[in-house]
Image (cartoon, rainbow, N blue to C red; front, side):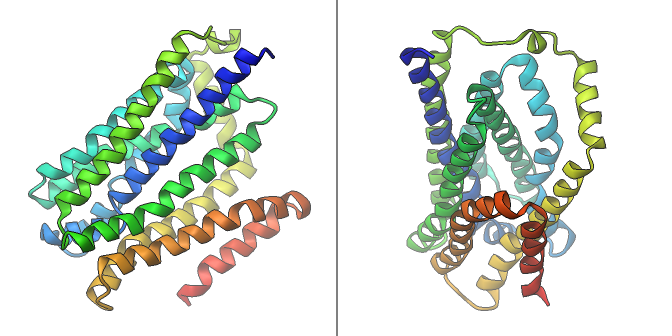
Length: 303
């Protein structure tokens, strides 16, 4: 590998990391800890519709994550990443126009497409660029995004505390992070125009039939389905905590937004610090024991 090519690949990677940091910071700060309070201020009906507000952004993530990877095989990774960066940059400013709870559901739904497209395609691009170091590079990328996710609650809570729950100020800050992610992507795209495209023949011949065949292969992989099911349960649990526990801290315990954000940040910091350790442990003793232990620990606080 020539020094010039190696440098170009390094630029691609760190651009993705920087973009990921601000993109995930933006998307997380748009909901944690502000979303339940914003929904309440819009007089969202308690019960079913409150739950819809909570999950509105996850639905497009579920719908688009799998097709986004396949679509990027056809259109190219960078085009799909650019689309996601446009959503990251535009969605936060739509919150400023909201004056009814049903509008909040629509904006959250639109915002959810950004993360659903960005994360799987970014990881696919990293794996493609660094085939011999993909595990190391994807782990590093994941750690950088977790930093953004960890900072978001306490930063958002601080803004709400300082501005006396001014939601517009909070979403302007969310917008600033989203626009930064978009701007970060632009030099990366220009850089790519100067680099010869490294598409394989298999990639060039990607067809709808091939995509469907790939999805069927995934659906038949019991290991993938099992881990996916466990992860789905984990996200279900965390999503419930992220929305309703914040509401509980505000309505029942009467904690101010800064403390709510600090508490939510603390659990994300634990995730960030423990992930590499448990990754190494699973390399030594296997995957099953850490997964089972994680499920037990996750369920213990609710009994």
